[in-house]
Length: 379
Image (cartoon, rainbow, N blue to C red; front, side, top):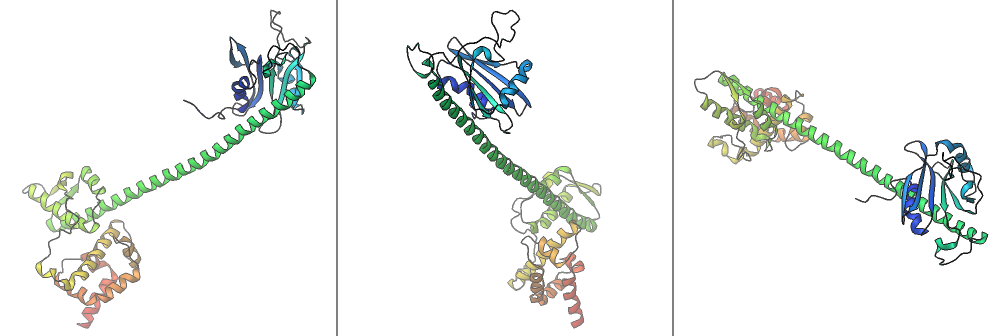
């Protein structure tokens, strides 16, 4: 699998591209500061059987000498092979460093400022003694001073341009990576918050369901308990919130029919709860309630009752603002006040007609209690 060419240090990449720029070059040695490892590294690529073998260069013993090379400001210098500190005399058994041999200066040293602009990275190019590296065939003439000036100028600018492009591309990728990681981080936070909101909403559904069965428990004198599987099912309920009460009632009716004559402690299991068709309000309404005259008022009272039960399950105060936020479709507190005022006569009629309905707002929501009190005073 291929990767970006600038992932590694650009000086290291020169070992791959210089042989294409200078075919037949004898050897390439680079010295550069590795910011990741926090040390100076040496690499050497030497031609062996028409291929270039790259390997690590041990420079520990000659670091002081190399540092002097790195501190020099001149971007280009020419050296003889054996005047360089890492050249070894092949004839000596202990491979001692030989800095005394005098050969033709055919090693081109190019200095490239490092990323911190404190020292120079070093590129040693071991050229042939003749111009064959530059496409001149069958030339036995050595490289002249003029040749070397041109070669040094061209190679310095070529390598410097390549290194700068690599650094800029890497910097651009780092910026893209930073932005991408920021987006990923924000997405993960949003996913976590969404999951937490979903879990909190699921817990609210469970508390509301428990509130419904608790009220039924008081009437039936039985203790209904939700199993873990039932709780998980209720958490994932996606139907209309106003239908949850009728689902709870239907569940109790079903459980009671299966546990006649059994203990007063009844466990509600997942399969006892049925959500199918819960898009409609399954509460049985007497025929006289079907009168359109009271339809909007009934929906208002049902909406407020469901919101009130939600607030109770979350242990929140039953204020107009909280009630509006708890509604399936949130509304403002002034809108609730206006609706109650416009329907106050019908509200009183419905509360009188059905004394067992809307018990929460009837007893705990002050605006509804005020409407009832005003009716009593008028009466």
